[in-house]
Length: 390
Image (cartoon, rainbow, N blue to C red; front, side):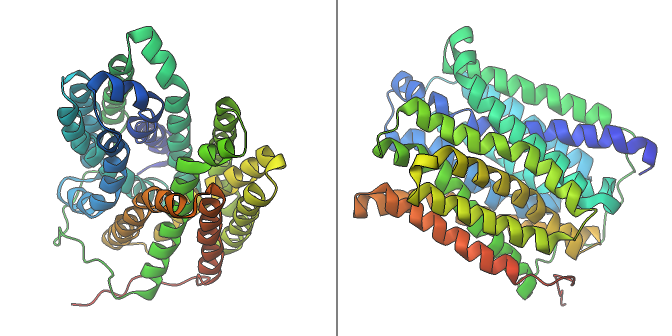
């Protein structure tokens, strides 16, 4: 891809990333209204949040196959169209079970798009991998924050939760069209001989990346699920606890772009990852042990989480160079890593039920972060992650 075409390609990637989270994050603020309107159980509407995260794990390997078969650009267009079109269908169907059923293809689109984004970076800006990764992780963070902030106001203006989800889905459809237009001048796809990537099951470094992503995702989804309730248990108002979580996610936005940009120019990935993981665990300990300074600890956790997510998503691009090998490593890291992270809120909820205190829940999140420090410290300074055989 030429330098001239890099800017529109990265613009398309940023726009695509905006659509990869609103269908899950935007549901959260509307969940009570959805439950009341559909007369559904807590368990049933809880699937609206669980299914997309599971799909991000289950369909990461499928994304590698689809990219090999059709090309990354066409595969991403399919992913975005799936999010938008099935999102519209989900918003208009009458029953709770149909809403849950249509959450699956929405989640499939999210899972495909999430795993395809690193491949777009590899094809677009291979010499600035972290910066390219920062572009789409920043888009993910902005899309998430915007959906969380706008879901309720959109519902108020558009007649309820259905109107809000219709609006978010319509945006995804517009993004899909913009993606096709912006990426139309990309290089022609050359189908490889092997369509199904050979996953690096025997690579220790690949499994190290899985463990890093899984521990990071477990802490992140655990904090997002239970931090407001934990501080509500300590006497904070719902509004204050909500601002605490919003602050953590907002500070992740600039960090998800600035940190990768800096790491491309100074010091490499490993020192940044170790430093950020130490900041993350410090923020986690502070949230439990010194809640009076909760806002400060949340901001520290947000900065470190935003930077870490972008850098961890860059690692497969650093460790491999051939497209097929990058795709295989991304598939394994996200496929297993997101599956681990998906069960974190449930397991932490069980910890709360057993112990009777959210302090125990937050300490488990701190344990995930302490494990993260040890794991990133074990990363090789430079190596090839995958050793394919056969």
